[in-house]
Length: 148
Image (cartoon, rainbow, N blue to C red; front, side, top):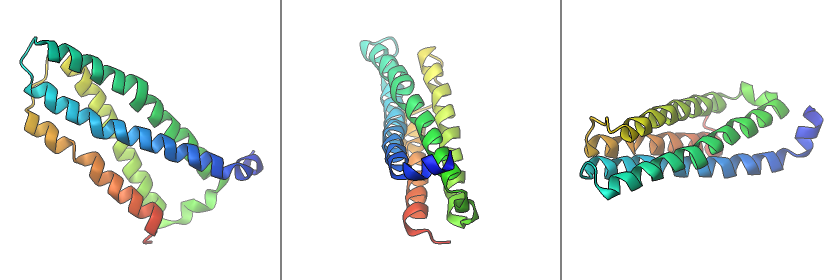
């Protein structure tokens, strides 16, 4: 199995990167929808539209992309277990775990908005929108620069 994965390593990496881009696009856009939703007048037409957009973004893009990130990333690590000795990988994986936790927090917020039970301000969601960006910056630096 490892030999097969090593032979197709670049393909696996390409699909991993594609999945990361899709996942990050969703994680960066969903909190922006939360900002609009928090600012919208209750029971307006825009609230219904935002609920649909939030649910679809989560179910059709963010969830499948996250799954693909973990599958293809896991396959890459299985094909090249020597990476576990690299310090940068541990930082990257910690950030990916934090992104996954944030993904689950966002999913809870989607459910709260769907049930009209949001209690947070638009400002809160603007700040939350920066968290995936910071984690993305750290991940990219770890993977490209490999500082340790």
